[in-house]
Amino acid sequence: MNIIIRPYLESDWGAIKIIHDEARRYELRLSNLEDFFLPLCEIYESEELFYYNLDVAILDEKIVGFVAYTSSELSWLYVFPKYHQKGVATSLIENTLLKEPNIKYIEVLVGNIPAKNLYEKFNFQVIKKTTGKLPGLNHKQVPIWKFEKEEENIT
Image (cartoon, rainbow, N blue to C red; front, side, top):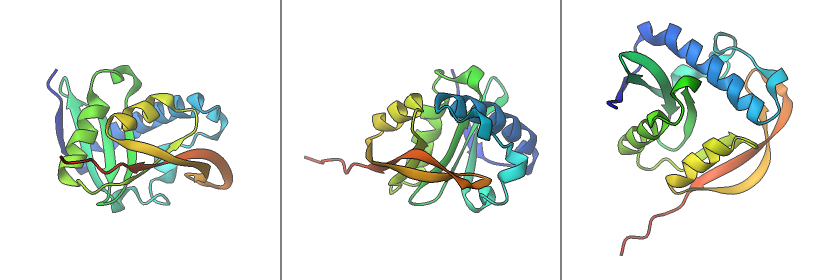
């Protein structure tokens, strides 16, 4: 499979809304929080989505995933559920870490075992279980795992 990663374009908005909303429902279901779903169009401003670097993944000529990150944090990673287990998330992370090798921080909802396993493949380790706020629902505290990237030993 040839997965293409490129920077976000304004014309990608419709695709990333659909990807986020479907993948977010899946993520919340894994964490038993499905009642707290909010669509991307309601939260992207308050969550400052466009503050981050934003890239999309293309497979079969369709946008199937996206990632948002800074130089120190991977903040958003969503892949349309139909394309899970096809290397899309891995490709997005690999590309992100090539661009920003000093990314150290990620937060994941407790219960999202597929995401936890994926980040661990890239030497991110859970440093603590704590609580965080759901996007758009600042009053709702939920359990999260905080990850940090382990330093790789060069010998």
